[in-house]
Image 1 (cartoon, rainbow, N blue to C red):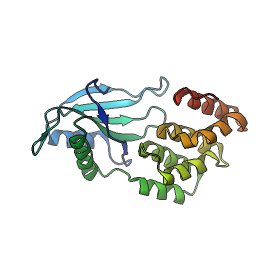
Image 2: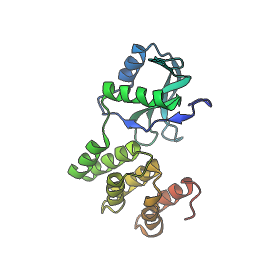
Image 3: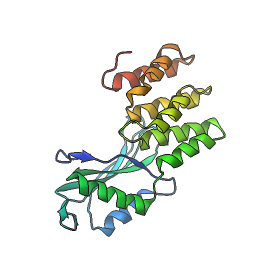
Image 4: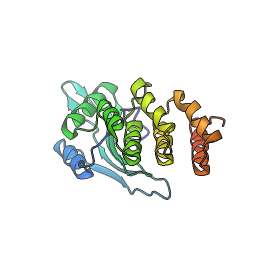
Length: 207
């Protein structure tokens, strides 16, 4: 639901389970940003849930946000909540994103790496991989790549399935060989299909 004049988007910050849309709304109300859009999550249709608050004109010192929005999203497939900002100029958008992070205390990449390393069961590993994929910086991050790569090779099919989505969230080209391996050779047909679909969605990659 981002607008055409929103030229920059911050990275996604994945919220902890106890942080809800009501907390994000409270943060937005503190700046008197109006809620301007709501999209209901639809898992079957693959539609992310989203709530958007408009922050146009917000001032920080001498800087003024020409266009800007705070987005709370819940991914369609797994229901993981995260926030991001869009708008311009970039400097004030990034500052507002940092302010939101201080207030809402989302997971850090380091915490999510630790959660993956310490996960005791397949569900925990899969959940950690998904969150890590959503929180991954746009610039390829070695610690993220290492853990999602490990999840793609996990002995449990449920973890591999979750990690295919995690890899798609990152858009890291370095993970393409892992996805091709699953698409070509995984013992589970549904996983081969999912990996092939993910490859096609990542900029038309040939399987």
